[in-house]
Length: 328
Image 1 (cartoon, rainbow, N blue to C red):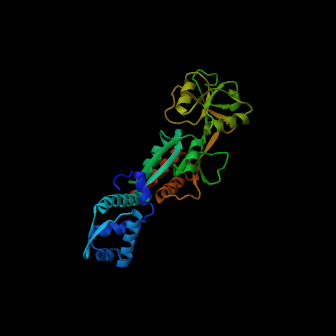
Image 2: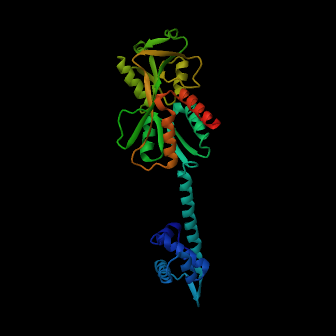
Image 3: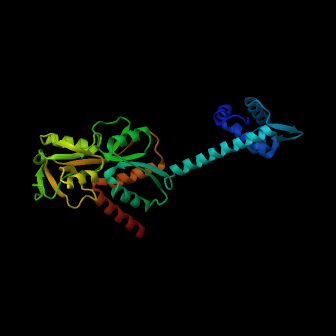
């Protein structure tokens, strides 16, 4: 057995069941079949048969019989090291899974849009951890299409993303809030002195937009069509700050949410017609197992944005409620 590689070793032991390995380990430690059978709560004959089947599978004896006691031979000593490793890994795996699904100290894998990374997600997690301080998060930022793919593939438990036109059958979706979109123009733009505009008023401006597959790109295209024009798109970005920076440089205009950290020189214009908003919600795979930790956080998210409140208002109200609960 010393000369075989790990793959060959795995093939050699893959016919052995976990109880057989546990039986072997117990006999090896006690060096006594009767005592081991008592500890394992099985009959001595059943234990002896299990050891014999294991030796037949491996093709070598593992013990030297010495009267009423037995001792590992050199094959058994080598095999015990491997069995200890296998059983230790099994126990470690069980512990890690228990920790992962523990609703108080487990792990949640959360996907979300790039626009949520600067304030919304930090606020959401920070507020949640005031009541569940030991929870852990794995965070994944991406655009809508990639987030949906990650969710279906099982890479994330939950996703915060914008609504999607094609409903994926295995997904469950709950709308959380509606977010206003604004036209941003450079400070020297002819419309910069206005408070409201109709979207069609920027029909002749170059539109700084996002790459295909991004939720905001789909929304921009649809709203411009509603307004009666197809925008010229000389630049396609991946993140809102990049798109906003191109607008600030005088390269065009854009239609985006007002997120923290945008260039202060930009002018924000509200759109009177058509109504420019995007719907944000939470999605998960309907019939897939969801851990208690992820389920608890999902319930929290839905409560957090109850009544479709904008994120800032939801944070203030929920934080105030938690502080009041702590005082009581």
